[in-house]
Image 1 (cartoon, rainbow, N blue to C red):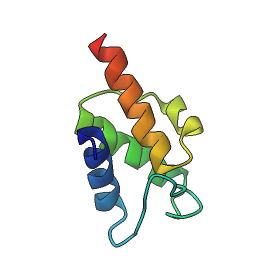
Image 2: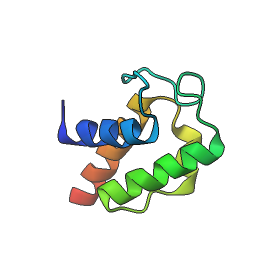
Image 3: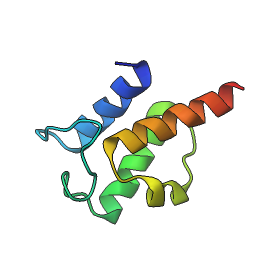
Image 4: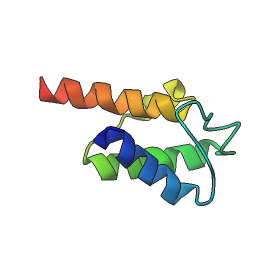
Length: 80
């Protein structure tokens, strides 16, 4: 598991204690997160990765794997 994935999973575990999830887990349907919970999750991820994650990202995030991919892509863009 990559460092980014580990950190994403840590933030989700803190936000959804006791929930089992993987990269295919759907944020709304499986983790029962509403729009406020998703916004808080995105803010927690921004804090974890020390970056400002735009609000429009929420529209593209449907699964735990989407979050992981989005953060990996962002990290690659920042490193370039």
